Length: 254
Length: 106
Image (cartoon, rainbow over all chains, first blue to last red; front, side):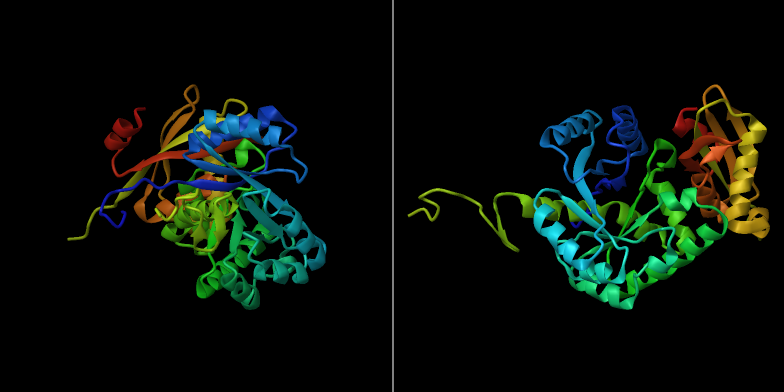
């Protein structure tokens, strides 16, 4: 319920769809499936060298399916220096920047950099999940979010899944302690790995994340992240809290 | 006076490459529950398949209301049935079969 006492519909967002961009049929199938599952906003991982024409084509397909497309890029730098280089180059071109933290130095740099939106850790290499207290504190100060992909929970089996669930339980507890926002996303590579928001919230129960928190990680948190970034990328943005409202000679009415 | 057993009914939509038989569907659901929650957890679900239509790709399941979240998570974790890629989507959950059929227009 909103502050005015009116019931408002939740807007659900899946910030990580990973179809093969080269396969337009699969892209279309996954977009229509997202719409069918009740999402209103999706983000698709795109290559760094994607053209504006291609993005426009994707946006057209999404708007036909009543979806809002968010452009997203996944950076996987090998060093913190490389990460800084990528951020300088690509921050203003994409609405969401996520960093795959493959080493501790990259993880720490990504967590303290305000230009990074989402931190991802490898699902299968548990020893490379660096989301500990120090990382959470840095992420909390820089307003970065932790992204939890749900596809590995579906595709892994046996001991690998047990270890993943155990790490996710620890990480979500650390994120809660330090106030780091957690974004849940599908990470789906095909339509069989896609699930609805309420199904993801049930799956999040596996790592002791309550249903209201999980639903916030699929709605309010990603939507506000995208809106904040769109505001920053608009030509009217000047600095945090300052934006151009009106242009011209008679702005002050003098 | 102790309250009677409370149940929940779930309407499911099946997405699969080929046709799926009733037993195959139930085996996949039980396997998923046992994988995630073990035999002790599975024993608490009180699971039963009420209806299944392979032509219309829908099913109605019944479970104990206490085990609802366990059953939902297990159903969401199914990625294949009988070796073929598949997914089960929960369309609606209700406390009575009558309300479920009415609301999900089955």
